[in-house]
Length: 305
Image (cartoon, rainbow, N blue to C red):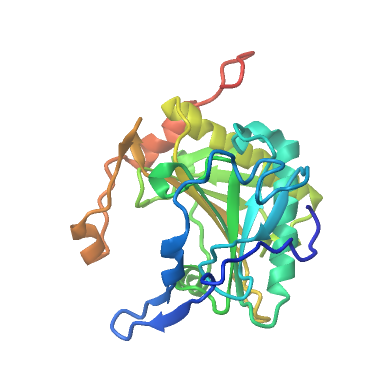
């Protein structure tokens, strides 16, 4: 599936989809309480549900999306995006052409969900690896459609989405795009990918912009795997303009990628002193992280991992 039409519905269990949005007056935090997600399976059965012929992909496909049968929010607000029918693939192994198909689907679904009267923000994201909670190895991501603008992108919008010149923290470029390590990242290895122009959201990306995003995503995600010579766990999310009809002139599309690893197989844990204070202590200098990622390239004429 690659159009903006409604995705195929999943057969949602009767107990799924019951979520209560709560607001903490002390911290200002919004939290969905979704007790039904305790019932979802941690691991699939012997067969992968995302492979062609599986539970969620009964027919052949190139890219596909469907409503999550174990949603974190009710009302068809949570979708799963399958990047490829190839179970052993990675995002970067799809190449620019395969990545472009995923980006087109992200943009189509952002527009379709954003057009709903009850949706104000569309978050595209991926959790890759058991270390960050992924329960199925098949390459996939998710989309959440919120009825409000979540606090993290809202703070960015209120600050104006200002990006400092990366200087020596620049990692790589693609036509119309740059990728760099943030100046003060929480995680040991983190990246920001942003277009050179002021593109506000995924649907606004033209063909060249989508090609550039595909190329730079393939580039940096391969670098992460080469950096540790392993399928590196990461979290990826895309911030874009809210779909609430507001005048968000500062909105600028960008991708953020973080990995919890500080060395191969060694996780950097966020500790109580950090969570309790909101001040973080990173064991990897951003400039060193950027240098390591710049050097993590395939040798000339070398084969893919």
